[in-house]
Structure formats: C-alpha cells, structure tokens
Amino acid sequence: MKSEADRETLERILAEAREIRGVSLWQDAWKRLRRNRTAMISLWCLLTLSVLALLTPLIPLQSPIDKDLDNRKFLPPGFHSVVMGSRPGLKFAGGTLTGELAEFNRSLEQLRAEVAAAGPKKRPLIEATIADRIDVEHPFNQMWNELGPVAWWMTEIRVAVFGDYAIPSLFGTDKLGRDLLARVFWGARVSLIVGIVATLVSLIIGVSYGAIAGYFGGNIDAAMMRLVDMLYSIPFIFVVIFLVTFLGEDSVKKKLDSVGIDQITIFYIVIGAIYWLTMSRVVRGQVMSLRHEQFIEAARTVGASSWRIVFRHLVPNVLGVVIVYLTLTIPSVMLFEAFLSFLGLGVSPPDVSWGLLLNDGVEALSIIKVFWWVVVFPGGALAATLFALNFLGDGIRDALDPRMKNRD
Image (cartoon, rainbow, N blue to C red; front, side):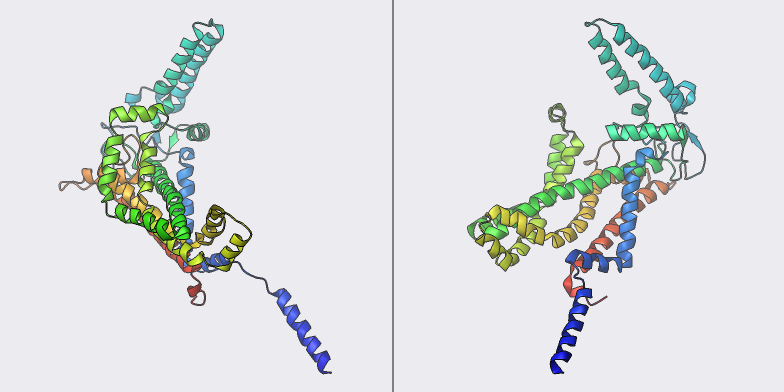
C-alpha cells in the first residue's frame, strides 16, 4: 500500500512538473515591464514618434526650408490651408508644386531625347547638364534639403497621393516664415538619429574596451583604466567645440566631402566617441564579476580563445546592464546635441534639429511681444522625448533587476 501511495504521489508530482514551463530572463523581464504602466506608455510614445519621424517625407507637411518673410513671418498657430509651391517668389508653373514638377519633367524629357540623338562627344555634356539641372532646379531640391534616395522616393509618393495639399501651420511659423510643424517633424529625424547613432558608437567602443579590460585584468586592466581616468579629467565640451570648429573649416570640409563624409556624420561620431567612458567602466565591473564563473571555466577547458570567451560568452551576459545604460544614454546624447546646436556648434542650417529650433526660438523672444509657439513646441517635443526615454530606462532597469521580482 505504501509503495502504491508513493507511486501515485510521484506521478502527481511529475504531472505537475510537466505543466510548469520555465521562463527565461528576457521573458520574465518583458512580463514585468508590461505591468509598469508608465514605462509602457513611454515605450508606445517613443515607437509612435520613431514611426512618424521615419515616415515624415510621406506626411503632407509644408516645406521645412521655404521662407516667406513678406506674408508668413511669426504667424501664430492656425488652420489656414496652404498650397505647396504657391509662394510668388518660387515662380513655380501654375503656382503649385505639381505644376512645376510636370513642367520640369517635360524639360528633362526634351534633354533626354537630345541625349539619345546626340553623338558620343556631346552626350556626356548633355548628361552633365541634366544632372546639374536636377541638383539646382528640381522642385524637390527647392522645397526640401538634400533628400536621400529613400526620402526622395517617399516624397514622390506623397506628391502623387496628396498633390499640392499641405497640413496648415498648426505650430505657427518662425522668424523667416517657415512652417514650425514641418521643422519639428524633420528635426525629430536628425535629433533621434544623433541620439541613436552616437549611442551605438559609444556602445561599440565602451563594451569592447570594458570587456577586454575586465577579462584580462592585471597590468592590461590597470593601463586601460588609467587611460579612462585621464580622459575623464578632460573637459569634453571644449574638445567637442574644438573638433566641430576644426572640422567646419572650409579646407577640411572639402577634404571630407571628397571622400563622401559630411559634417553631420562626423558630428554623430564625435559625440558618440566621448560617451563611451562610463559604459566601459560599467561593463568592466560586470565582466570582472563573471570571469571566474563555471561557464567561463568550461569554455577555457574546451579550448575557447580569450577573444571568443569575451565576445561570445561574457558580453551577451552583460547585455541587461548595457541595455539599461543605453536607454539612459540616448537622452543624454540628445540633450548634448541640443546644447551644441543651441550654441551654434551642432547641426547647421539648412539642416534642422530640435536644438537648432530652440536656438531660433530663444533668439525670437522679445520683451515687446512674446512669440511663445517658437519655443513651446520644439521644447515640448524635446522634453517629452527625454522624459519618455528616462521613464522607459527606469522601467527596463526594474524589470531586469532580480531583486525587484517580488515587489510588483
């Protein structure tokens, strides 16, 4: 009887055990993150912002660079309809973007017909003329600044779908009569790219540097960390100002342009290259706590190389801390970019970022008349994004912290 009872008990325990499914660290973290309402709202807000920024060329916004000092300077937010290309100074055919686009395409077709009929000697000259006309006279290049291939294609779809319709100036206009809503959307693309690219640069440098120092230890670790301490003692704001000023020189800019590197790309890399120090220290501490664990000893036993152990076994095990730090680094980088642009050292016109918009807004402030919209809307967009990133970072930190598991 006793053996029968024991067998039934074991069968019941085994049946219960089969129903229990293990939960990985990331599944458990996602489950707890979903219960954090503030973090989830922040996540959805950031996803929405990112999608809108990505699809900005498809949205029927007004031109972010077209100026109208005579009729649209410092217009308050309103709902007056706007026709793309209707400003008299543009001299578009029919006073519309689509009319000018059709006229321009007809002229290009004539030149392409001449290319087909021309001889081998004249053909390159006509093709160069076509390329120059597209760069200078194409309506897209007059209404938008240096559209990339994907943005150009999206803008063509936008014109095909919406024609000359443009969303009214819901955010008002600035001191040069440019639509602030369009500039906030296009500025979001630059500010978000700066935050993401610069953070990825700091991630690559900081994680690699910290993981190597933490794993090898000894004199290698001491030398690498002393270098970090030396770099910490340098006031990086002056380094960035020096680099941005140096790279902005005409001779240097021409050399960079000749190899296909523009100033804003260097700007991304420079900011990212100064934010890796803290990341390296965080990763180093985590790696030092893991390098004597059994799974590392097992990897050494089977003959894994040091580099494989570092990047195949150690780095994936510190990703939780790295992700948390990344979500807190992105707002820091965005704020730093806004600060540099505010000083006139960051993104330069005709490119636009939220920091540049804030600089324009502050310059427009006056004790005689307050044009509140030129500061409130760009500042509100930047503040809301920074708050959302910080709330999300706090939520991810709590979700990945095992000590917080039973405090929900």
